[in-house]
Length: 470
Image (cartoon, rainbow, N blue to C red):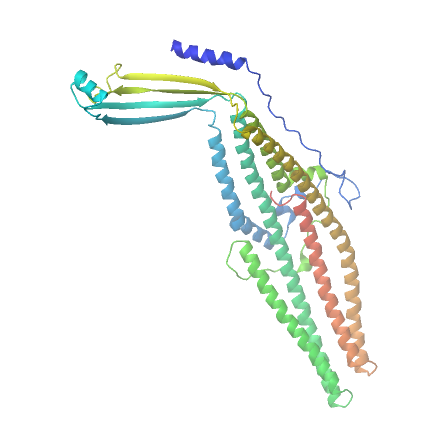
């Protein structure tokens, strides 16, 4: 025991003569953040992204779809398994500062040549032609974390775990947004189908009137053909919309982790509601809230720890090894205590001298990788700000477009009534009636599309600000 204390004291003195390396501190890089988002009047600390998704989406049917998606979506489940895997590695990393301990049992029988020196010595001194060796021992190996290498390795494991955690949150925000977008697209298709079916009734009425006028000699067969073609075009549109509805239902079913099936819905697009008071909040808050941006910052923190590891590899390392147990050249007295006991302790300091510049290269490459990750972090922040700005400008402009499209649709609906009255009175021809119906149909379809785009822009803004993972 006294010798062991002397060995440890010797290494402590040696280490004290070596200057310690300070830990690499992390400094957050300057980020390209404006004081407020573009297209916002004032900077406000509140944000719609602070709302939980159940508060943001009030439609109970949509809430049910999102809940199923969070539970069953396979991309999200895979991400959560990755989190669990990284968590196990993080648990293992906490034991890195402890020594490695092993236990081994070995038995060996050697029979040297009788003409060899060993063979003749065995015969002369032991009176036998072979030698036995039985060994049972514990082995210990430990490296002192002088320069923080092990601590940095633990930090790497922690950053990798947090990356998978933030990654799972990022996937959830995408899943929530994708389900909402798909649902609103389905409602738009429902609305467009209803519009097309209503227009089909108008086309049937126009065709019927035109046929009667042709029979009475007040219209030509060309008018009947054109009215019939208008009706057939509307029937074709209905078939296309029904196909798109089925495809969208299949896509939504897969997104929520179910086999393709019908999506039950009772609301129309006009009944849907999202927060009308759109508050974006501050860009700085968005950075800390968006999982993908946070994930990129964790990559930077990991690379900072990797620089510390590469630097520590260039400095002396203190390693202590020890083994002890029972050893005997006869099986009968193998476990006789204390006669069979043995032990040894070895400690040493190793300093890399020349390794073909490998350690220096690793250190410089680690620093370059950190610089690359700084740029990637800044780029992710810039992209996030751009996504928020795009969603804000889209929402503002779509408000105006929806108002104009509503006015246009109302005007063209009145135009259909006027055209039909004039046509019956002989003051308008069949082309004017068909044109009025076609323009009204297109305007109503366009209005439904703009309403869906506006809903989508609000969902995009919610996701871009970092909402959806709570």
